[in-house]
Every structure is written in structure tokens, then in C-alpha cells.
Image (cartoon, rainbow, N blue to C red; front, side, top):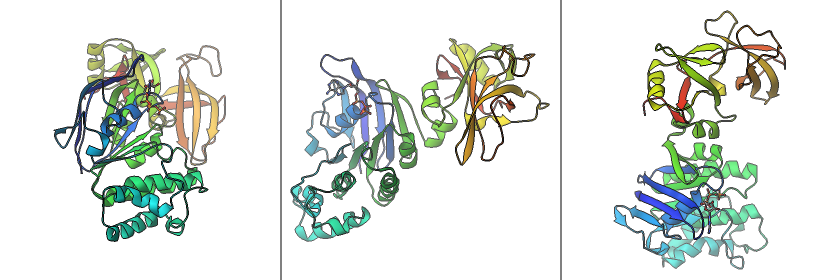
Length: 373
Ligand code: ATP
């Protein structure tokens, strides 16, 4: 197992803009971490710096407290699995899986059982004698995964979007296998992906990146329940969080959205006021409650579009101003996505009354959450 620490790491490729802005991260022994972010945010750059394929422009990499910033990959005891298969196509599947062990001069008597164990896990036992050439893209990527997993002595395994080329059904199975492997093997696992489902199902802790910086790190629940930044609220969730431009009203915990007065957490109001900047009120589609019109604080919306998604219904609705007529022209333009239970009967043009509960909304000032961190 390895504790991986990054201190003040930054990177700029020759002639380019900074790919990584100075960042500090600690990954504890045996944890399962995901690096999640949109394409180009610096995930692969960070992974290659940890494995030693890339030297950072600035900063230090420590593994178990030892500086390894200038150590070559082979001196780091880290396995890496890439987005595309790295397989010797003239070798058999067995020899491919055995390669990292033979490279480390593991005894042949130990190699066979270990390779068979990994092949069993990846459901490749019947292919062990086959040459890699001619196997499907899925099978080749499974071999690549197997090569990353086969060594028992690695301290950490870094996965760089390894399931991208795998078909959706096999992807689901492999994701489950990887989780199982991690639960039974004491190894630090870092998994790069731009797919939030992959990150949230595999990792105990997710590091969300954007434009070369770490925006938030936390458990999948933290990121869903308490996005520290509008970027996280928008990026995590399907659909992402709703954001309503607002101003603060009085000192008793209320926000004005259009001509609605919406109660919000007073502590957040105070903090938002201190942070300053432009304000939005964030609420997840899951946390908007459909209520009766006479419910205190209920706001009326006009349904614009309805998507039936099998397990639930997503309604897109616009907030209606106080005093506006149903279907009238003076609706506010703010759109809200609302997640409703399967079987909800609702259609475009209907009025939907919603409750924005203070315990379920977050104020953001210039993108930053106004809850105490
Ligand atoms: P993806 O999900 O598409 O793989 P990523 O989050 O892994 O993206 P990186 O591949 O680390 O992002 O790239 C970060 C930034 O650095 C991008 O702007 C990219 O264009 C740039 N970059 C990456 N590799 C190089 C390189 N070898 N030379 C110059 N610029 C590079």
C-alpha cells in the first residue's frame, strides 16, 4: 500500500497554458480515489506525474513520505492501466498477464496460480492459451487491466479511463469487478474518469477537477449533497443542480428570486453577504418537492417539457412571477429541472407548485458555496 502526497504540483507543457495549477493532494494507504473532471482538465497529466511518466514543472511527489519527483516509473512500484490496451499481440493471453511478474523475476511456480486467479476474475480462463492478436477490443482491454492487477507487490494502481473502449454491458461488470478487487486487495487505487457514475460507484473519495485545479474532494455523498462550487453542482448529478439568480432580502434569511421571497438558511445568508459577488440559489432536481398550491412558501412554475425516463420523470419548468397569469407572458426565464416519481402525470403547460426548502438549497456567491466548510 502507498500513501501518495502531492505538494505544490503544477505543470505547463512547452508552449502551452498551465495544464495543472499549483495543487496539494494526499491519497491515503489503501483508499479508492477517483479523479473526475471534463476533458482537458488535467487528469491524465496528474496521473502521469504520479507514475513518473511526466516530471512536473514545479512541486514534489512523495510516496510513503519519500520524495520520488525525479525517480523513474520503475522505481515507484506503481502499476498504470491506460485508456487503450497495452498488449503484446504476438504473445498469448497467459504470457501477457505473466509479463509484469516475469519482469520482476517472480518464480514461475508462483506465476501460474496468480495469472489463473486474475484470468478467473476477468472471466478469461478459456482464452489463456490464445494469442492476443485477433481478440476483440474488450478482451484486449481486459488483458490490460489484468496486467495492471497481476502484481501483488504494487503499492498503487493508477487507472486512466480504462473502460472507455469497453461496451456498456461489459463496462458495468468490470466496474463491479474492480470494486471487488479493491475490497480484497490492500492497494491504493486512483481512477481517472470523466464519467460521474464510474467515479461515484468505484471510489470512496472523489477529487473533482476543472481547468487544472482541484475544485472539491469528498465522498460521493458530499459531492451530491454539499457541492462546494457551482461547477460541482452542475457536473455531478443528472441533470445537474438548478441555479436561480437571486439577491438577499433583509437580515432574517430570505432570498429574492424574480418577485418571489424564498426562505433560506440565515447562516448561509450571512456568509453569502460576507463573500459578496453575484448570487445564485442552488437546488438539486431531486430536492424540489411538488406541493399543493396553498402550501406556505410554494412557488408556481409552468411546465415546458416532460421527459419520461422509466424510473422517474424529469420536468423542465419556468418559475412564474407572483401575480402572473397561468401561461402568461411575464414568467421569469429561470428554468428549473424537477425530478418526479415514475408514473407522475404531467404535461407541458401545466402548473407545478414547488417547495424550495431551506435545508435543501445552497447559496453560491461568485460560484462558491456559502455554507461553512
Ligand atoms: P481527457 O479526459 O481528454 O484525457 P484530461 O483531463 O486527462 O483530458 P490532460 O490530458 O491532462 O487532460 O490535458 C490537460 C491539458 O494539457 C489540455 O489542455 C491538453 O490539451 C494539454 N496537454 C496534454 N498533453 C499535452 C502535451 N503532450 N503537450 C501539450 N499539451 C498537452
